[in-house]
Length: 110
Length: 113
Image (cartoon, rainbow over all chains, first blue to last red; front, side, top):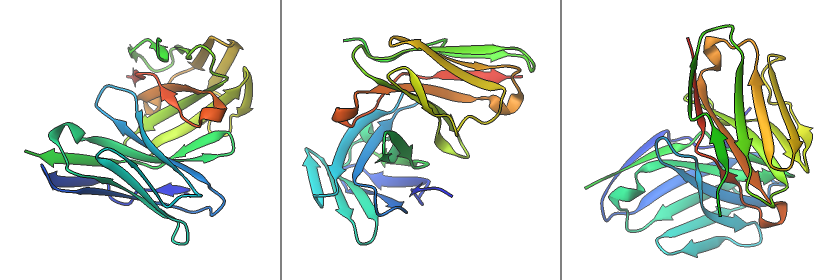
């Protein structure tokens, strides 16, 4: 059973609007979460992270929100740009290991 | 600084052949991970090493898969014999644990005919 879930395989958003990517996890002991972005034919690259002692972390256009009681996090991209079109993976640290969700493909339409 | 380096970038082989994928982690990193990406399962962990020692290989699908890390700057993932269902993109990644971030290579796309 997947420990990290991204229930939307794909998302399309108009340029300039907000993109919201969601992620759910099963283990309440997880305490560090990351988002990775992946372009075709490239490896995933780190985007933003959040520790469980926070409920929000912001970096430019990217904000990650963590709701520990719901075991849910989300990535907000505002405003969305065509260059943001990629697959986004949610991940968590489980001890020394990193566990990834299946990914959400974001398409930002010009 | 060079990132994680993987070779080959693309490999096409026939069923039953041996495949060896190679990885050079970022210098100074003490953990190395092998992931496989498929459409159905996304990014799944195969094995990871800490200070060159295999820590968790529970994700290795079968005995046909083996991984080694003879030193801090090199790792291999071997599939023998290969099967069509092994076709996927294989990623190597490294990290320095305290930083809590994983750095990926560009991947090796394997096609087994």
